[in-house]
Amino acid sequence: MVNQIEPGSAADEAGIQRGDVVQDINGQAVRKLSDYEAILAQIKKGDIIRLFIKRGERNLYLTL
Image (cartoon, rainbow, N blue to C red; front, top):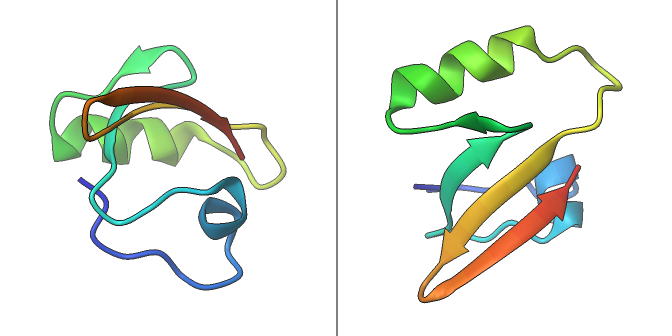
Protein backbone atom coordinates (compact mmCIF):
# COMPACT_ATOMS: atom_id res chain seq x y z
CA MET A 1 0.00 0.00 0.00
CA VAL A 2 1.28 3.45 -0.89
CA ASN A 3 1.85 5.45 2.28
CA GLN A 4 3.51 8.56 0.90
CA ILE A 5 4.07 10.35 -2.40
CA GLU A 6 6.93 12.78 -2.91
CA PRO A 7 5.52 16.02 -4.39
CA GLY A 8 6.71 16.49 -7.97
CA SER A 9 7.91 12.89 -8.30
CA ALA A 10 7.06 10.64 -11.24
CA ALA A 11 4.56 8.84 -8.99
CA ASP A 12 2.90 12.14 -8.11
CA GLU A 13 2.74 13.19 -11.76
CA ALA A 14 1.26 9.81 -12.75
CA GLY A 15 -1.54 10.26 -10.23
CA ILE A 16 -0.62 7.64 -7.64
CA GLN A 17 -2.36 8.36 -4.34
CA ARG A 18 -1.91 7.39 -0.70
CA GLY A 19 -3.80 4.17 -0.07
CA ASP A 20 -3.31 2.78 -3.58
CA VAL A 21 -2.33 -0.89 -3.59
CA VAL A 22 0.26 -1.87 -6.21
CA GLN A 23 -0.79 -5.22 -7.70
CA ASP A 24 1.61 -5.47 -10.65
CA ILE A 25 4.69 -3.68 -11.98
CA ASN A 26 5.58 -4.19 -15.65
CA GLY A 27 3.67 -7.47 -15.73
CA GLN A 28 5.24 -8.86 -12.54
CA ALA A 29 2.91 -9.58 -9.62
CA VAL A 30 3.46 -7.73 -6.35
CA ARG A 31 2.22 -9.80 -3.42
CA LYS A 32 4.53 -8.58 -0.68
CA LEU A 33 7.05 -5.83 -0.01
CA SER A 34 10.00 -7.99 -1.05
CA ASP A 35 8.37 -8.51 -4.50
CA TYR A 36 8.02 -4.74 -4.87
CA GLU A 37 11.63 -4.12 -3.84
CA ALA A 38 13.02 -6.85 -6.15
CA ILE A 39 11.11 -5.52 -9.16
CA LEU A 40 12.15 -1.92 -8.52
CA ALA A 41 15.80 -3.00 -8.20
CA GLN A 42 15.64 -4.14 -11.84
CA ILE A 43 14.34 -0.80 -13.14
CA LYS A 44 16.81 1.72 -14.48
CA LYS A 45 16.47 5.49 -14.53
CA GLY A 46 14.50 6.47 -17.62
CA ASP A 47 12.66 3.12 -17.93
CA ILE A 48 8.92 3.22 -18.45
CA ILE A 49 7.06 1.70 -15.52
CA ARG A 50 3.54 0.33 -15.94
CA LEU A 51 1.59 -0.14 -12.74
CA PHE A 52 -1.65 -2.00 -12.10
CA ILE A 53 -3.12 -0.63 -8.89
CA LYS A 54 -6.24 -1.08 -6.83
CA ARG A 55 -7.84 2.12 -5.54
CA GLY A 56 -10.81 1.28 -3.38
CA GLU A 57 -13.07 -0.81 -5.61
CA ARG A 58 -11.45 0.42 -8.84
CA ASN A 59 -8.56 -1.10 -10.78
CA LEU A 60 -6.29 1.31 -12.64
CA TYR A 61 -3.34 1.16 -15.01
CA LEU A 62 -0.81 3.96 -14.66
CA THR A 63 2.41 4.67 -16.56
CA LEU A 64 5.41 6.45 -15.09
